Length: 287
Image (cartoon, rainbow, N blue to C red; front, top):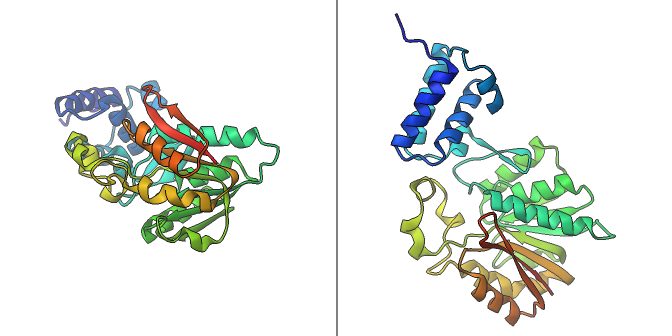
C-alpha cells in the first residue's frame, strides 16, 4: 500500500529537509511551493492539514523540492513574485526585487502624495521586471512614467507585466542609461533606480541562491560596487527638473562615497533611508 502524504506531513518533512540542506527560509520556501502546487494561499495549508496530495501533486512538488535544494530561488521556480501587493511575472534574466525596494516605492509615493501637483514625470532606470515603474504607475494613476533598461528581454518582460496588471501610462525603452538617456529629450520630477551595486570583491560572500542564479549585470558594479553611480550621477542634473529628486538603492557601506559624488554634482539636499535592518539602503537627493 502506497504511503499517504497529507499537507501536514509533506510540509513538516520538507521543512526539515530544507533545514538539513541549509536552504534559506525553509518554512516559507516550503509553504510557497506547496501552496502553488495546490493553487491555494499559505493560510489554506494550515486550515486543511489533513488533506491528501494526489500523485500528480506529489510529483510536481518533488520537482520543486529538488530545484529549491539546489538553492534555486523560489521566485524563479514559480515564475512569479509578489511586490507591494502586486503579482509580477519573473524570469532568470532579471533580478529578484527585495523588500527594500518596496520601501523605496513607498517613500516615492508618499512624497508624491504630499505634492499639490501629482501629475509628475518619473524615470525608472534599469527597470528589470518593471516592478518599480509599474507599482508607481499603479498607485499613482496621475503619474507619467518612463522605464528604461539596457536589456531588450527585460523591457519585453516589463511591458508584459504592465499589460497583465492593466497599467497603461508607462513608456518602455531599451537603452543604455549611462549614455543614451539624453535622447529622451525630457526632464523628470523623479528619477528612481535599483541599480547594480555589489562589489566584485564581495562576490564570494553572496549566498549561492544569488550568485548562481541571478544575472550578474544586475548585481555587480566594479571593484567597489560604485561603477553605475560614477557613470550615472554626472548626468542627473541634465535629466532632473528644478528641485527634481533622485531615489536609489545603495550598498550597505556606500553612503559616504555616494554622498561625495552627489555633492560634487550640485545636489544640495542628500539624505539616507535605512532598511528594516537599520542599514543605509536608499539615498534621496534633491537639486
